[in-house]
Length: 144
Image (cartoon, rainbow, N blue to C red):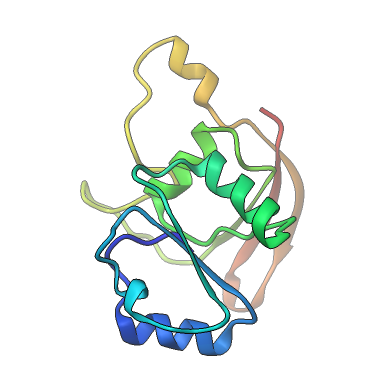
């Protein structure tokens, strides 16, 4: 899990109770996780978040071969623009939400130059599945 300020000490304790192994990545030296003692909890501290380095540490130190990212638009953008995604699953809910301050699937800085086009996430549809209550699940392979 990547977190700097949202989790509380209670939340950390809960996550360690329900997890086989819990790894927190943070750049906050005052994160409440540093006050929690649990045999299955590990903390990766980085001065500045470096996703590629964090993924390398997860693989080398904890044997993690595959992860699922369930996050918001800002972190999604970071993973996408650093080319760290292999697949994207999108579940579309039958609800319309909008507004200038409404987060999207990919937030972060806008792409404004021709060089920024390298940061685009080009996808290839692998499957489309209709779920209950008019939800749709789209599975894409990231091809560049």
